[in-house]
Length: 335
Image (tube, rainbow, N blue to C red; front, top):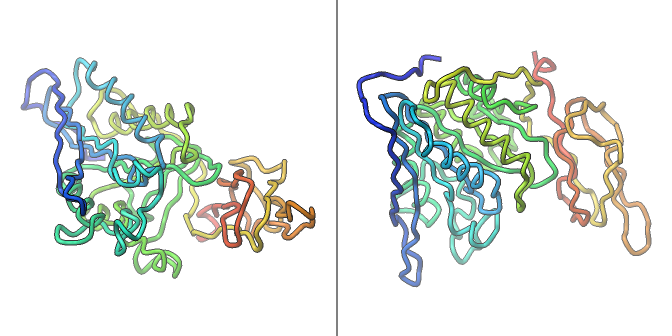
């Protein structure tokens, strides 16, 4: 990748936290955002990293905290690293994925409105404020976690070779190439994925990856450490840190958005053989939804295609339409 550093700025690494208030709540309270800027010993690329765009997804926030401890002790690095540990304070405080209608009836999900609107709703204004920082980056890392028991993976825009290199450098067991725009299917458009940060970045020529670090609503040590290791590997790949990235060659699949859903409400017992990262065949048993009071089976969930099993809900109680499992299709099946 042609993202190596220059050498014309010589100084000790510095760190500062910058607070700004782009949004005011109905009560008149200012909504504050905080970003950390780490400047290295020589000019180089700018890496923008954010977490908790969905407030219940906390593993990324903890990974950024540990990255902070590493960078402020680093004797030397090149370029600039900008981090936003809590991109959406509203959902973070509510431990939620979206805001209620009372706070933002237009855009309850901030990751559907990028690059935002300075004169728009609360989430549109938050996204616009963050975009003023992110748009100047050389690369972007948007840290997320999933809503089910999920194999850590990295999503990137299909056809973006530089983003795919960043995904390889990050080093998860699975990479998901997601079609965008005209190449995407109807569900992508119906779910307004065109408003994701990753898509806005791609449209502006900025390679962006979305690591999904485990399960949401709880800190998972393995997922957090994977996040820290992955970020540092990406920083090496773009020349911010010395050394070579840890590049892996995991299964490359397409994020086709297909998933096995609950056809009926009840209690879901995953099949004991369902292990994340394993290859399953179409029709393979994924578990049973049953009536918890009468014990009557309501649905035998099965895989809808061959592929890599990367998510299985283990929450127990499910409603009709909830995701039970997701299977990623290897890209060679599309070639």
